[in-house]
Length: 460
Ligand code: GAP
Image: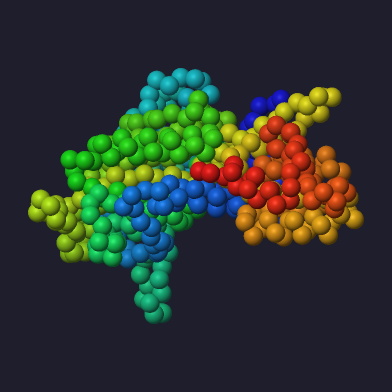
């Protein structure tokens, strides 16, 4: 079987309706991707399962959905205006722009020489390393860069108040700030005592210039973020708890534990006191999928300072008054979707030399739980009746085109865990054949049992 590359995965995803290039008919637009009918179901399922873990099954944890556009002072208070930047340099020869740390990381991957950590280097150190190691422009192959500048990652837009009078606003680069600025509303309406958590899922935007690696780094992406407000004395234990919580979530989704690892940050973001990622071993190497951040009192203190609103909490038992400490658990939904696709993509050699592609996703993540297939077209009335009934319980698909073998393969490729085949006996005995995606084993069961048979595999 040939090795999985990001290009191979991208063309597989395009063919199967998982992901399409953004603005494709206009020649595309760098670092943007659209999810097709199968991909959107995968993403929705990821979000549903994460919400179930973080809100439904977590004690004292609530949900919120906050705005993408906020009062611009939020970004002054959060520190993003001053510090949320990447080290960029331009090639003087071909005028392309590059992230200095990423050029070094790419060089390290190619040469297998990990002598320095670009995350922990100053602008001057990055520049000197690039010159010393003769790291050339990936576009034109020359070594003639400008000096490195810090480039803010936030997208700006303007809000027209009245003609000629506009104010600059930003597309949020993280969803977390929506949770902090609602701390007082959350506490008042839930009457929750500390420690309590809040989860937020939504789009974030960053002006990323590093291309490639399919959907790994995009300018628009979805974050699933959970903030725990707690007392400082409990923060380290909670930080460790959320590190394990993230790892357990990925393993429970069926990911290969050997391809997951913790990675402490060498250089902390402006808000963090400690930070640890879960990295996944993508076909291009280990890289970040999610993070746990000990943000201390940074965010609430700054919002208190900039808004003038008191963010203190008084413990009803001890009467102690303090600004809560925040432990953040964050996952990029698109990164997780990408890692799950890499992890699930399998090419299997069958008896007789045939190959089948199977997306071995946890059934909870699969776009369709069941595909109903009439053996022949004249059985479609009964098959459609079964299909319609099953759609009351979960996403199903229906396929009557082509040989039964080809139809099974189409479902294997998009990860449908079960195919239900309706044949002539079905009309007499009320039974169907149910086929398992992974084992390809077939069983005969009653039509009435399909729902329970599938539901049993969906416990999470
Ligand atoms: N609120 C904290 C925060 O935003 P982050 O590490 O900058 O932390 C969290 O981002 C997660 O968002 C990352 O672990 C990653 O999965 C995802 N992410 C960040 N930038 C991304 C990008 N350009 N494209 C896709 N996902 C991204």
